[in-house]
Image (tube, rainbow, N blue to C red; front, top):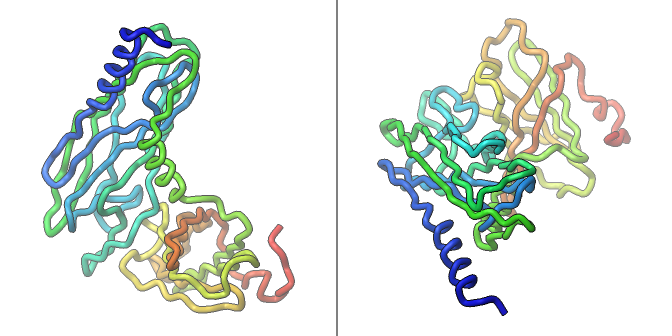
Length: 289
């Protein structure tokens, strides 16, 4: 049995970790959340940048569409620590006629993989980040927060935080994924781009609601309708080029976001354009490689 003084010390360390107070700036409450209560040298963990926005406010995706700026973090980390990229959840379309923007609403977690050095001699760490964002309703308001997260160091292995870890894992499950088993074909015509989609055979026969979000702001006209038509077991999504009649890009890159009753699914796409029909239309028996 642990001596009372060690139990008291553990409770104090946990309380210090939980004392990372959220920062309120206008319509946004921001904070850093970790999926561990204690870190271990050399063991990566996840930090979430949480933006809780008031009703009817939104911020922006990596490609904001016709206007906007995505959130950013400027880290100040202990020596040897490395922070990965800020991972956005799939965006939603935010129409503000005559414009279209892409972004996020509500309570959003942006995930970052944090990697400690293999050796660390201190008994605790402090992660600091300067967060900048733009949120809009009828008007747009820039925001800022100086965020800190202090965590104890546990050399024999990280100590998970069950509540925070569950929330972060739920956010991770919704991140864009590679299109395992899906087939895509991008066709370029003078007045439109056609994204042909063939789902895996185990997918439901009914077509979900589909929307394409390009990584680049200069591929399509964001506010133009994206028409979806059934095509055999799959469907085709028509996109309006940014400059019809002019030479277009070599590739179509972005996210295909599918919405069903069970939820949303985002698939990464990076494929070359072609002037021909997809091969499975001339060869229906073709299988995904």
